[in-house]
Image 1 (cartoon, rainbow, N blue to C red):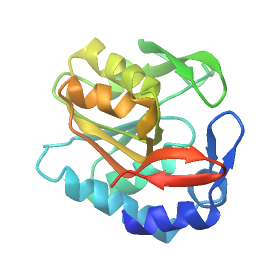
Image 2: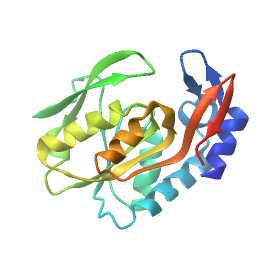
Image 3: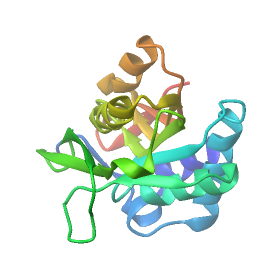
Length: 190
């Protein structure tokens, strides 16, 4: 998606530790018109998938997931990273390693929100090694939900997560695929 790539080149910052900071428009301060267009583009890519729900993990994936679900007119469900007193009933749980935070955490989702009749589109703001998506695949697998596909705003192609998911047979759509980040510059896969 050209508009996203242009925004990354103009406002994104390459930080030490292989981090691409896009907080000024994608996940802390959100460029709503851009996010709506991203949601519409992902919805177009999966228009024939029979999606009944969009799934993400809190927090940064929620805005994109909302825009995708809005364009598809389906609900959003998201895994929580922390158990809270307003969660009750049987819970699904998966372990996820966060590259950004360099820690593992449990993702929790009430079982009542997903079933084997659902066709779930997995969405997140970033796809690097694929850990968040593997956690969501685990949650879906626990109830036998079908997978419509996997979508991300930005994929760090050089980390291989997207390629592994594609090789496993999933349709993976990333709106911008970063091929490399060196000397403070971002290069996109063509």
